[in-house]
Length: 176
Image 1 (cartoon, rainbow, N blue to C red):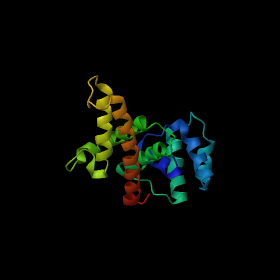
Image 2 (image 1 turned 120 degrees about the vertical axis):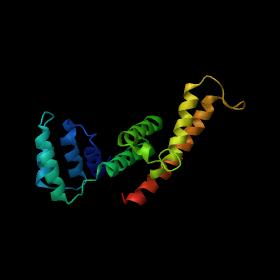
Image 3 (image 1 turned 180 degrees about the vertical axis):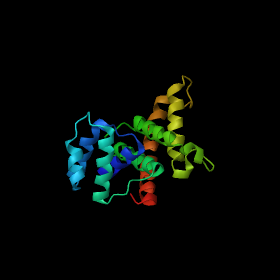
Image 4 (image 1 turned 180 degrees about the horizontal axis):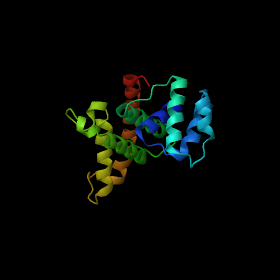
């Protein structure tokens, strides 16, 4: 994940405090520089949460980075995972499962208009993921011409394409 996605992960409450120095170092590697970011980079894994929060806020102010609200942070964070899947750095099924957990943790399920997660354009990805999950859990062949294993492989290909489409749409919609 890039630095701004990690900012979102922190704002969402999913970045472990013991990873704050790694977070800061990624910021430096991407060209972000500020005195408070330097302090964060020097923190050890046992640093007080109060100090981490204090210097995180200072660093964001110094860098003129607006910390996203929890809803937007969830989307940025989920998109970071989507990019890892698209780039081949993460397995597609575990990646989508992680994205779904983020979306559920925020409560996007309650924003449905007509389909699950359609308020953030994730409904097709979710539908394909649900299909894959159903195929994985059953012993009954779903198609007389193809094994469930073949159907699962085909679904993974569709999932990857749909995840790419979702990521691009999210980037455009939220100016990521």
